[in-house]
Amino acid sequence: MSIRLFASRALLPTGWSRDVTVDVADDGTIATVTPDSRRDAAEDAGGPLVPAMPNLHSHAFQRGVAGRTGLAGADGEDSFWTWRRAMYMFLERLDPEGSEAIAAQAYVEMAKAGYGTVAEFHYVHHDATGRPYADRAEMSKRILAAARTAGMPLTLLPVYYAHGGFNAVPPLAAQRRFVMTTDEFAALLAALAPLARADGAALGVAPHSLRAVTPDELDRVITAAPPGAPVHMHVAEQTQEVEECVAWCGKRPVEWLLARESVDARWCLVHATHMLERETRALAASGAVAGLAPTTEADLGDGTFPGVVYAASGGRWGVGSDSNAIVDPFVELRQLEYSQRLFWRRRNLMQHAPHESLGTAMWQSAARAGAQACGRRTGAIEAGAHADLVVLDEDDPALAGHTDTLLDAAIFGPCRRPVRHTMLAGRWVVRDGRHRDEDAVLSAYRHAMARMGGGPA
Ligand SMILES: [Zn+2]
Image 1 (cartoon, rainbow, N blue to C red):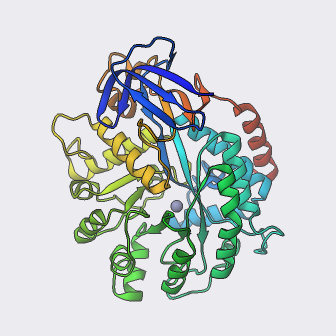
Image 2: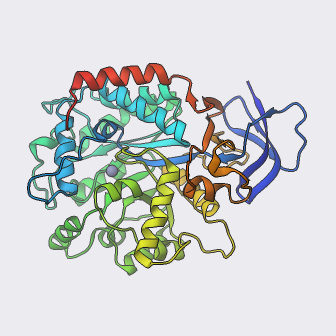
Image 3: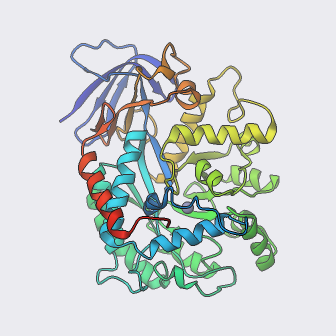
């Protein structure tokens, strides 16, 4: 059933417009967008309309670890690596039902928070002993099912993971659930292609990182990907990783990738935290997307992304909820901007045009690049795009009195609960802050977490 929506304010690719009618076709895409129109019989959107934010990096199961890594170790040396150990311990208990329940809860939270597509970087393929399930695609199917339940459009990125460090170091015992051969990976991709198609999901590939994949394997994984499909890879998240990469090949991770691979608009380099200025400028020129996860990077003590140089060089960047300890695109954008302010001791840094609203510029940039990274036409209110839309809640005190600065208020203001309704692929999945299935999904999540054990991960 087609829908005709009317919003007195809507954020179009050209900026905020007034009295906008949006026609949504039966297939869930936007048929036409008409500014300066009359409402007539159209449905009132109920507030200002913005494109939903693509979430370009998620590990859904890590939602179950949120809040379980706050017990300090005895030696005062807690870091990304000790966090990872705790996360691996949680994995010992994760089963397929639990994985689906946690992912559905995470995706419901994403829809409520204003995300409109999720790129799931999915690496837990096998059972807790490291044996493939009878159906090798079992865990991937759980992700597809969770996305269906939540009504969350999905870009599924099965991960190829083979080693415990540079130079083909054997994987750790704790990594046994991730590991497969490149032939097995190609078979998994082939099995997933029709399932993804049936669900309207996009399918890409995710060679995990240079730590976990040799150059030969990287070539084979990229070759196995469907033509034009997204390629996502963790890179340069940790200084230790950069040092090990230099020791291995004489180059830094981003430097090595740009020299060896045809890094282009298909690619999303996740984190890319530790880059020299020349790497930053070269990545910006490549057309690839830097996949930032500002709250996760802050939580894990990763470092500060060189956002000012990257953005000033025309680099494309989007945001993801990554560990899902925080699920909120507005907070990701705030954290990104604040990280730059603390570093440079200046303000309003992640934009270039004078007198432009920072919030608007950041939302537009992240939405556009996030859509590119997800390989899905979304992130813009324009004809032909999927109707992935967020209606802001004007009753939020943070938004009172704002017009062209609405997104500054929604990102940086106090008392923010900025999302009222969310439409995904042309269907309302969140109305007045409630997801259509949130009670059932939460109940399944509580059961799963109780069954898999509480306490620290
Ligand atoms: Zn990640």
